[in-house]
Length: 596
Image (cartoon, rainbow, N blue to C red; front, side):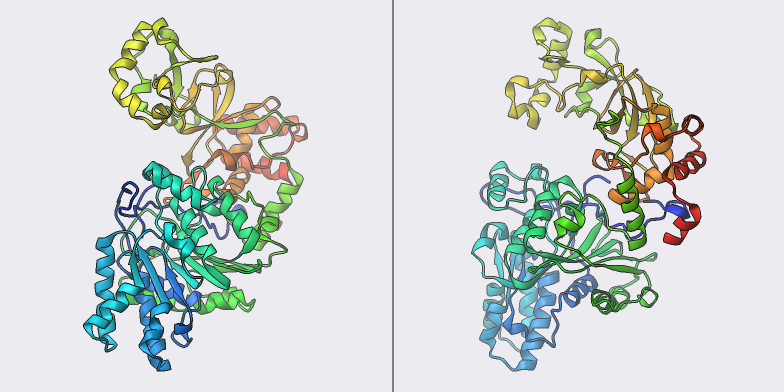
């Protein structure tokens, strides 16, 4: 069940193309109502039947097995896409085995928070059971035992251990949850910290319900693999589980209707870490029917199983499928790092990335005095941003650079100001600025409704972030947060950055030469390895990815190269910038093409 929401990889030149970008755009979904406090319902989108069948095949939940001796657990049933598929396979296995009907009861358990959707799923279960010869009352009792209306996250600790946990967990931002409910979930699940979304808690709950050797198969965002909020979940997997498969399905239309979602099928087993299969399935043309989708997906499970067993050959994979098997030298934390923050690449490109990481320091470095930050978030742009230079006292207006001011690679200030409530020592006393006080008073109701104001009522007129006065008047590079390419722009101290701009300052680099390096395809290579590529070929240039770009040391750049980078930056000549960068990094075009 996935609803559209959230923030948002066009191909590099041939020398720097990436493989297997396993970065999901997180969808958002509501989860119905429950006490204490209502949980906002924002709609649900079911997983397509063909994808459900693929996931059950990948998980080894097949009719030929004795499924009545296993417990399959579905944490968020919705209207029954996974539940009905599980039941069909279970009933077919049961019928073939000739087992008594009572053996079916403990073999399947599902939860759904919303009673309306649960009722629909039970009706469908009853119809399925009728097809297998069950009477109406018997079917109703069995359907009721299989599907409970309730909060899986609350009840999971008391549930029996499962052989398989499978499904599509809900994704809800923490701020969309009632405070009491969020506190409860965080008290139950240690991985749900900071900005962690609800699907993180579902993953943790599912993992702890696994028997030794059992499997969790979810289709969900794979952002937990690289984002900061997934660090706790990565630690948990590294401690006690084996990440076995990540199958990116960004371009495979896995849901029943079009939504802005970038999911991956993820298999995690309660076992010591073994090898990991990384795969990508894409469909250039969407399937015309569910039958066509099923036909396309039918061969994927067998092909991926062959890769998992080390028998897969790339040339023999079905159309649209790319896969590689990574032999893990140790636990997940040792192989990828607990703070691993990027998609996994094909071995040749991973080797190139590792070689560059070993040789060159990161962009953010004490050695060079280079830092990466983000602009100011106000919490209410319509109040804190203005183009009226006479709105309040002149000293309370700070020229603000917006993302649109950087279009074309040159900073062209649009005349917007931050209505600035800050002094270096803290918030301004409003009584000292009558016009500012009157302005904020007119908007007091909206300002006080914000979370930051409710948390600190005495600071009701603050922005979310404080103004960093050291940035005012300082030369710096701005990088827009979303773009198809890295687009660094120089600010010579005229403005202060809005939160859609990332900020690079340096004590050692000529900022124009640094801007030239960042303009190159080599710099984009790093970000594309670590970061998020969104629909339409756009990247998210977040600080956590920018910081990990590797750079030569300023002293390793010759005067000729430095001047060439400055020229490339000023003229937005990406080809020149890339040519000099390849020279600085010691990447030979011929050998690089071979590795790619």
